Structure formats: C-alpha cells, structure tokens
Image 1 (cartoon, rainbow, N blue to C red):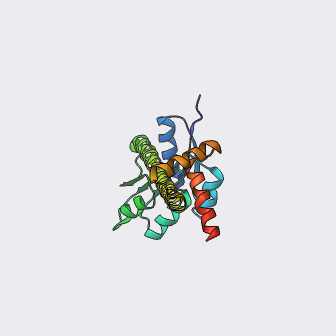
Image 2 (tube, rainbow, N blue to C red):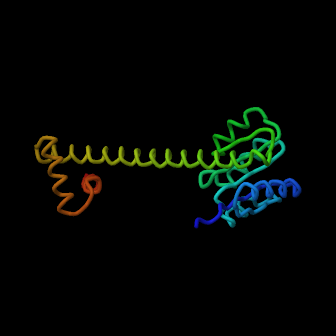
Image 3 (cartoon, helix red, strand yellow):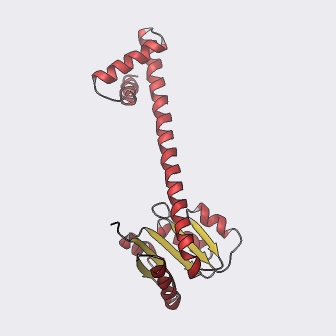
Length: 194
C-alpha cells in the first residue's frame, strides 16, 4: 500500500489552516504538516521534505512570492499557491518561479482536491519535459564531441568520415565504452598535445 501524500500547508491563520486540514482529510489520506510562521520557511520545508507544498496568502508582494517559492522548492515538488487578490503580474511571476498552480480568490476547501491533483499532474509534466530537455542537450553535446573526434581522425589518418566512424565504433566496442566517451578521450588527449 503506498504511503499517504505528505503535504506542507503554509498558512498564517490557525483557523483557516484547520479548515483546510479538514477539507484535505475529507478528500483522502494525507500526511499534513502546518507552518504558521514564514520565518526560516526554507529550513522548515526542507526538514519536512514534503511531496507537495500548499501556500495560502491574502495578498503577496512580489518579494514574498519569490521568497516563498524559493523556500518551497518549486523545482523539487509541486507547489500550489492560493491568493485572495491578484496583483499586477504576480501570476506570471509565480508560474515563472515554478509554482504548479496559482489560484486567485483564495483557498476554498471544496476546490482543494482537484487543484491539488492538477498541480501534481502539471508538475509531473514539467519534470518530464525538463528531463527530456536535459537528455536532448546531453545527446547534442555528445554528438558534437563525436563529430569533432571524427574530424580529427579523418585529418590524422587521411580517411573518410565513414571509416573514421567505424574506427571509433570498433575502439569503443573493444574498450567496452560508449562512443561519446571514446570521442571525449580523443578530444581531451588532442587538447593536451596541442
């Protein structure tokens, strides 16, 4: 059986926190941690290491928004922010800072579960996109190194591109290494010798 979702609720108002806690308990099984004092917020959230962070503020300033978002680890976990009023450009700043859901008109307990689900799904989507982007960048860098090493082999041995590639592939198989690693070794050695 999977463990319950761990949620940190940043809510300065104790009555409001109790109301949200009741709504979460009614929506499913969650492990809820309350943070009333936003001083040292980053440490508090880091110590709890939750799966999700919910932040409820009346009317945050841009500085408060940035501080809370950085403290909540928006790139590490889904963050849903609930505000009573939207300031100029705050929603765009929140999304840019990594907030998964930015809801104006406050946290309404009956809407909490669907918003929580949407924030988790959106976060998962962006995590996959970040992973794919990192893998694509890595593959592109490896391709550049392989092409550079191939060019060096072609020039040094006076062979064509296909023969240089075959030589690199054979070397990689013989050494039980990846082509990119063989190419990087060649490029590094050439840099040392020049």
